[in-house]
Image (cartoon, rainbow, N blue to C red; front, side, top):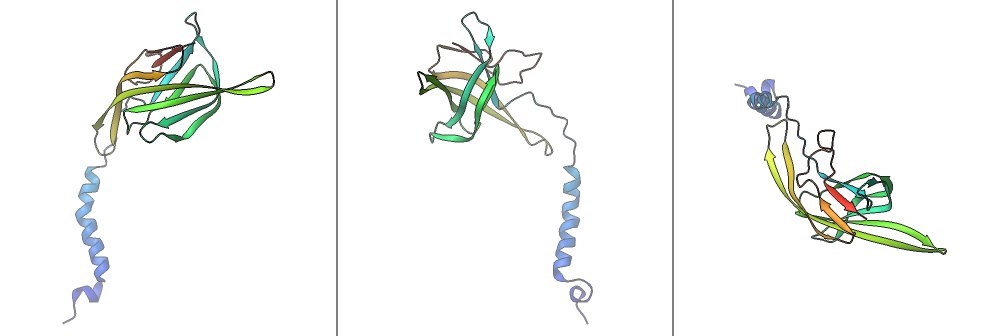
Length: 175
């Protein structure tokens, strides 16, 4: 008497069919539409202010993020950037991130580099969401632990979107 597997289907085809029949209900159960919309962000909005407490536009030749544990540069940096608000990416796998702001100045045909540093600490809370949504990272308790600017102030310790409802940046730097 011939074997059913060898007569009609190969063993591999049967394994695939059995797997598909078993997995199909699980695949259908995870096909929810994700309606969760987070207002958490993974960057710190930094604004520069003058002595009169007025937001000013600043230009930096380079802004580099540094992983504080390994003291290595982040792969992406901001180059030749002029803005009123700078969005600095937060490395959420660590509790501190450092940024170095470079400004090139030429005085009497001599080029000099002005370097300022901003190091911040924070807490990351991860919330697991339904399968289609993944997870949400909330960054809060933002603190400045070191800086070389004249004055730095944390305006919003929770990293939420900067919009018309929350117009203030997360960090205010006064020069």
